[in-house]
View 1 (cartoon, rainbow, N blue to C red):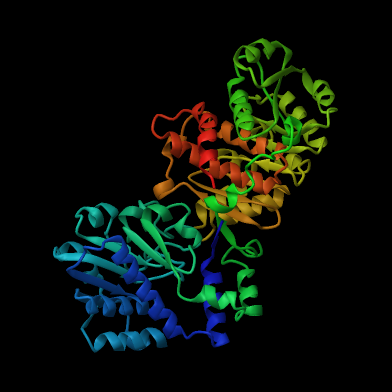
View 2: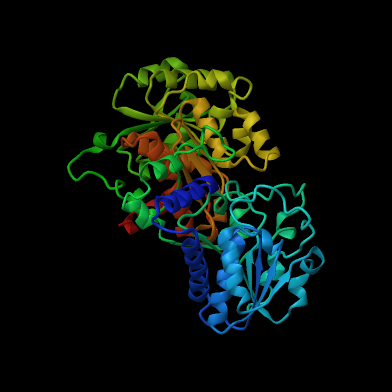
Length: 538
């Protein structure tokens, strides 16, 4: 997993490094500019010609002046625009403005010159957006009419747009464009082919509109990692990493992680010396006849991900249907909570999955109640969540720390309507904030599904599984894929993974299976891709 820092955490770490004497702000700015130019050369080694650099009134603009100077040294024809008053630039940005001014002109960037300027310069090969960085939390006031949409920027293969830290107007913590009032943000904001950020990604690179606006995201080091490794930041760095995020308040006390291959794969292999019960027995509850497909998908996923045994528990009248479809997965007929209680007398059943195809009748609520009372690791999905939409607190009161809730957007809104409303109405409130708050309220792990899946634990730990760019998996938008994900989580819980780790591994593998299969994917294909994906892991 890779650390993802909020804008506030990043500023605090930079300031702590400066205060420690390990580095100066001017050095950090120079390294940032170098990183941008390095990323451009690495991405487009043959690109050359005319560059336009747009600098803003803060330190992001200072980075832009460094980029302009370094591009000119490489032989580029460079034109620099400045939004704001040069006399009011922060000290480090002002110094880099002075250094550039010794080499070239700075043109004031007024609204009328900004509007449509890209089209007015057909000879431009490279555009550098250094207007506003991670600190912007308001709309681009006075510049909302700027139209530099992704189609215009990418229409010519010879014209590339590069954002410094984040595309201007994008909130680095939420991935939202605040204040656009329902207008398509891709038509009213700067959109990049390449975004170069520093030290770590920010949540906004992974959430909501962020991936589409940022294009490819490259992280460049500016020397902070070595400073932290040497312990130079000590108390200040620690305080910065655990400071409340802005504006997430007390729920931003832990660093967010982006899920990656390396750390997730280490514990997925099975024990050499063991038997089927060593790897756990998973129980998936099913609904009435004709509704059992979702449970079978979940059960197949639990078995493929490594649970030693998997049983589908279903009403007696549905046994024949399941038996017709299942071989390696066992079928157990049970009617109501009494039958479930009898099954759970077997302590070898380590994990349960309730929800896929279970139905919305009163029986579902009772089954959930009795399953949770057994205090086994439990995944609740689909109908098991929706059944409690009128009284979500009744569900929360029954949950325990080894539960995982796996809502999509609609189910999340039914259980946490106030958080869902805030997500819609408050551009400074992110999916990370909402998922963390949901996990704290529920007292268990919440896996909030989507292309920007967010997983949070009650103690504030949080991960983002972003299916974007080279991991984009649009084929997952197919009926039953969520049931497979719930089964994967259940299978890992049965194997003994803790709730957070099971959810993280399952979310990552779910996307990998979709990528492995590719176009034409249907939910039944996902479990069958797991052997291929697992074989490719280190």
